[in-house]
Amino acid sequence: MANRINRAIELLQADQPIFYYGGHTGFDLSHENGVEQAGTKADYINIGMEHGAFDMPGLERFMKGLLDGGPTRSGHLTPTVIVEAPVIGESENAIRYNTWQFRQILGRGVHGILLCHAESPAAVKAFVEVCRFPRNLAGVGAGLDVGTRGVGGQAVPAEIWGIDNNEYVDKADPWPLNPDGELMLGLKIENIRALNQVEATLKIPGIAFAEWGPGDMAMSMGVDRSDVEGRHPRLSEARDRVFAACKENGVAFLEGPEKGRVAQQYDEGVRIGGYNEELSAEARAHAGRTMPV
Image (cartoon, rainbow, N blue to C red; front, side, top):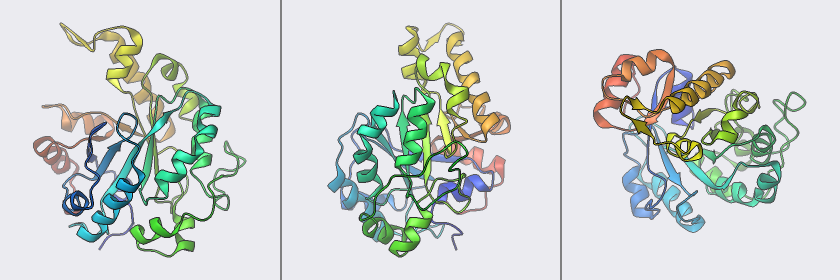
């Protein structure tokens, strides 16, 4: 039996690596695909709405399909679902003006949101706050102000999570800030402006994971993603800086699994990557995973 609603959090709590399925665009949000994806061997599903369509009716159909196709082999009602939001984290105002996006996404029953181009601590602070209900107070006065998520959208996500509306309000709170929270908030530190603020940004309470976005980082720097020696040296420096800030603040680091290095990546502290049947199995075995896949 599952110990938590969110399978990804349950695994991270056990110091296990987790792996996601789904790209930046073109995700099939039909009910039928939801039923099929309930059996995914990935630990969570990533739905890209930064570049993909902002399709809330589709997202709701997909989430209900996951529920109808479940439970998962691990005993969870659905796989974890994290959505890449369309708004980018360039400023506090950008987040505040687009609060509606976060409310709409969370109101479909997903388990997390990934904020792209997280460029400033003020934007990230606002991001955490707009995703929280006001009565959840962990971290308030210690880096955060009170949450601003409104009442009225609990029924659908409560059904997906298998709890009542009141319990949903308590559990739809960022982990690990709230140890009992079931919501994962993540950041992409994927341009020079974001990189220059990363140490301060990752001190904001409420962030569960972060990645360094090598494609956009290379674009931002005006360099090729790789050179004759492999990764461009400036990108290696950016990766190491983001990784160090994650370690300093207890934030899980996301990096693609590399053939021949997955055990080393785990030992270094990488905890999230894209799903690959062979490499994910290798990492899971190295970490001693016992949860069914």
